[in-house]
Length: 307
Image 1 (cartoon, rainbow, N blue to C red):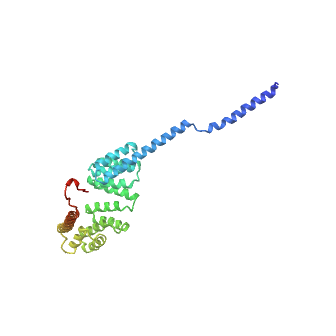
Image 2 (image 1 turned 90 degrees about the vertical axis):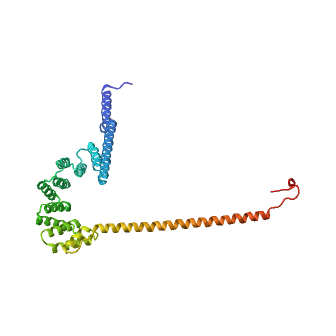
């Protein structure tokens, strides 16, 4: 049976239409190869990020143990993966400063600030390095920049006060020590420095309450105690004698422990000797009992039935 031409054309057109409709979903199915490539790329990025974090963590551990050279090496490895990581750069700058590599530290801090101009800790640390180089005006300017971003940062407030005090600008220094204490009333360093600065302007009586507050927080602070005693005209604490006294106490404790150990050893030796004597007595007793109970052969030895 043959189809007429119009019917045949209709069937063919319908087939093409349905075929095209069936192909539409294929355009929305992602390529497996592209998906695999994307997954591989993401995995590689995750591995690199993890490796950078490991180098950074290792660097921080070395930094905390005062191995600043090793810390810089670890930070450099982290930066080889991500050169613009501001946290790693900042820590590297701190390590370089502690190594006395002040110019390198400034370069590192400047790179941090070129990436993030509001990184206040980098500005604060840059101020420390500039002070170490004797560039005090630039140091103060760096502290001011940091405080414009973080006005209540007690570390920056204290550092600026300390630098002003060192420059003989006592009234300005006390302003910043007071600001530090407003934010952190228990900051013993600020309390001590406030007392010291008050003494330098001839206000010893005003300094004593600050020393008292510091000692209420840390009664063992010899520097504060001596400053208070001097302000009150009293003798200072002899730190060397205190140290010798501590050594004497430690020696006495050591002697007592040694005596106790010796007593324990002697007691155990005595117990061991008594134990051995008891065993020896038991053996002798057993031997005598055995000799008493043992049958004596009579007549021909061959005829004696022993054990």
